[in-house]
Image (tube, rainbow, N blue to C red; front, top):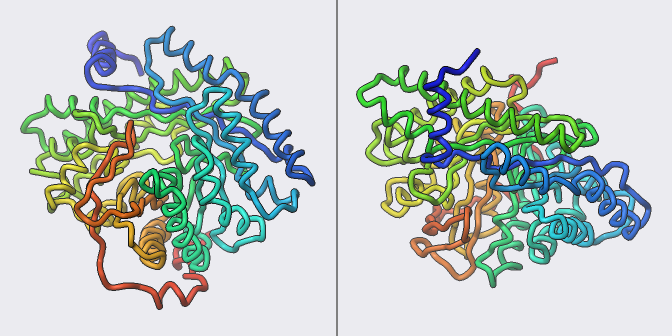
Length: 453
């Protein structure tokens, strides 16, 4: 397939006027060969490996920006889940592993490093528990480290013991970082069906099934999609879907160019392209505004889930046509604080927590960047995680929860996170509790359709 002169002009226009960018290049690095019987030895090996493999990541990113005129917003690293790497060290405290990741990221000018993670969808090992217990202090004591825990999958069901533990961990992380408005929770995601090649934080980690190193790219561009729909006034919904596919195709081809070029210069394997429409707090860079361009008066009203389903599907189809290695989360993100249209809809009372939950059945991830009252209980947070995991488990899709209980704040107050993270009103939650449900523990079995081999 080739581009016409008009299509090339349209793609250039996406950069100049519609905020198209590469949201992240993320170098996945295996740390399996860094395991050691001592903490000091493991940390030294991690540092050596990161400098050897990721030492030129930022330089290469800047070179590509300058040569191709393509903005690359973040240069990131993801690593093997630390619970797997640190198990041999025998220590109870995994915070030193977070510190060495943070120090290396700062020295290499890497924006974020993901992988302070554990995979506990079927059971929690002693190493997993040590890592989870260390999350509050690890996120409070570092600036660039991100953490994630996978508590459920379509194949394994939902580990409700792990869900309850993560409810307490999110709460403890908020309290441990109370002086910054619970900011530690911004760097923590709880997953169902976590992908092993996701380039987006806070959920990125380099999965056990990955090779030694791979360069993954996350492409954005909600502004470009909205602009494409602006020119389709009066078109039918299937015509809008075709236009979104065409736009996603162009964006993905650009992402593939960057992925291959960066991987070649770093001497690593090209990974996947994650074509997710990742919004920012900036005007005209909002997924909510795309939905409103389709005909909704405001995101969150009746019809929002259907419009989001159309958008997510069209983005994926356009991306798959453009590149063979589309993966990660690909679709459309709906992070409240990071999307100007979403946060306006919340402030106006149109977009509620329950509606957001319904939307997660068709979006890329799940309940993302949502500020909730500081007095929200650990069991309520766990119940939110369980609900979201159920949606992912039954539908065979990735879902996640990144909620921020903001200490000292109540529903209707404002939480500010800064930069691309934006800010948002504190959302109200249901008053009735789910304590006895969470306290039962155990496991919610996988759905019948998971039994395939």
